[in-house]
Image (cartoon, rainbow, N blue to C red):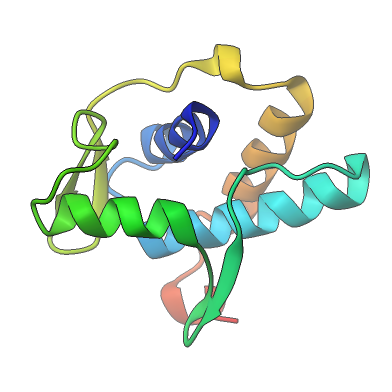
Length: 123
């Protein structure tokens, strides 16, 4: 997983402390759509795949699952998983990895989706 993707995960989890990784994935998905539409450029260097409850970034999902299962992951020093699904950041996001356009789209997606429940975000 790239440092940029780790930073995006940390940014969202810093903003919404203890949020589920499912919500993080949805926020990233909607931010990716915004960024593609506005700037014709991907936000995240990962591929989204459709799963029963909506799209997930595959590399990030696999790394989060590894942390959850106590396996080796590039995220081991960055996050903890509490209550099976909640991402607790151990570090602050390094915003030097963000362009203004990435920060804009991520921040908008967080604001638009932070109060929505799982069923409302399910695609």
